[in-house]
Image (cartoon, rainbow, N blue to C red; front, top):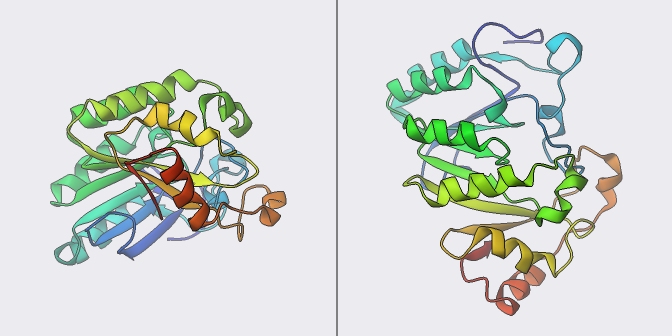
Length: 238
C-alpha cells in the first residue's frame, strides 16, 4: 500500500478495516473508490472525488490484492464489505472485484449517487449486491447545482431499486444553503413511501468547496419537525 498510479484491477483510495456503522446490523470493512461524476460542494469525502493527473491518486492507494488479502485473513470476523466513494459505479473493474468478494462468503453493500442505472441493474441481475444506499441529493430541479443534469438516470435508479428484491435505503444530506423546506415534499415524490429514507445532518468540518465550511445544517429537531409536518412516514434522521 502507498502512493502511486493505478494498477490492474480495482484500486481504492480509502480503507476502513472495521466498520460497525455503514451496513446496518453487519460487521464490515469499507473501501472507497476514487473519482466522482458529481461535484457536490458539501461532500464530506473530497479526497475521493477528484483524481490527479495521469490517473494518479491523491494520497494512499490500496490495490484489490491488498483488500482481498485482508478480507481472507479476517473474513471469519466480518459479515460484509461496504463499497463507497467517490462513485463506485464509474469503475469497469468493479464487478470482477465484487465477484471475488462474494466468493469469500461476504455480503456487499453499495453506496451510490444513482447516476448509472444500467450498472446498478447489472449488479442486481448478477446478484453482486445485497444492500444499496442511494443518495437523493435534492429535488430534480436542483441537481444541476451539483454538477449533474441527467435526472432521468436518478429516477431510473430509484425505480430499479423499488422493483428489486435487494434491500435498500435512500438518504439525503441536509445543508440549509441547498435545501429549502419545500424541497422535502418534492423529494418525497421521488422517493415514495415504501423505502427507508434517512435525513443526515450536514457536518461542515470538511467539504469539497471550502466555502461550505461555514454553512449550517438543519438540526435534528428541525428535520424531525419537517417529517411530521409533511407526513413523511418512511423518513428518519441520522
